[in-house]
Amino acid sequence: METIRQFAAMVCVAAVGCCALRLLLPQSALEPVLRVILSAFFLLCLLLPLRGISLPEFSAGSALFEGEVAGGQQQLSERLREQVEQAASDNLRTVIDEKLKKFGISGTNIGIKIHTSTAGSIDITGVELMLPQEYAHLSEKARAYVEDELELPCQIGLIGEDNEDGT
Image (cartoon, rainbow, N blue to C red; front, side, top):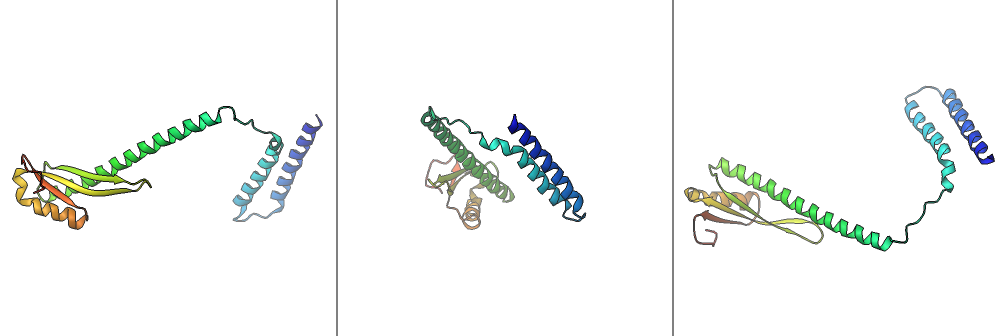
């Protein structure tokens, strides 16, 4: 009971002190900052009795829990890597498709080769363009765009063609 009285007295003294300090200081541009500081001080005075409370330790199943957390982190990390790869691939596909449309090429299948390192960095290692037969005469223009402007190796094939050598 004595502890509760001491706590109540401390809170009252802190509140009176904060109010007195606020009344004594002149109004200025720093008044909002002072209000925050006094509010934080009063909040700390309220929370001070909680410092002696200790939280129980969860040691009984901690190894099992840590294993579950590690597995969950690995799954999350793998899903994130896949989503980042997909987003990078989709964005590059969109950029290439828009440029090819400006060249007058449509109906192109665009394949993106992506490699993710163990450090998590994503490397785009190449682009495969499959152009419809009617755009065969524009294949070098498309290759030049990908290799020169995007600085990516590019293989070009024609849809309906049997050879796989990229020409």
